[in-house]
Image (cartoon, rainbow, N blue to C red; front, top):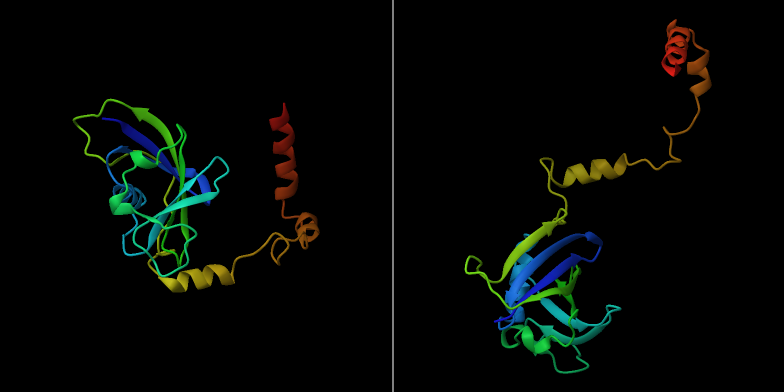
Length: 191
């Protein structure tokens, strides 16, 4: 039985990814659940896969359920569609979208096919984790939402007040006895 290894990249940062091993006879629903588990997301929202090509264009849709929207072609249903049936290329790619409101997107790429399955592994399984997963519902802290407001209020850009060179001349001209001592130490360290 073939074991497929998919790499699920977080679309916003491709250094954040999870490798998931799954049997070719398992369904897209199993892959959907494995991706969510690997990123520590809950499974309370809508989701869909799109068969894709090397340029990550959306193709045939494989959806959790048939949603109330227009489809170009009748979608496949995750629970009824085996992964092996949709592998058309040795580097097959899929786009995975979760929580249509938040728009979580992942690029899922087939990176390995093995004929040997491990008796120690329960499929599907996460075989590798790279990077810190984004929090599903935003920043959480001891201060809650107030912390984000405070952080945004005091977030300074490079040209904002506090980062200019004003006042630098005043500091240099003040002689507190430290200036010449620091200069002496600086010249000694050069040797």
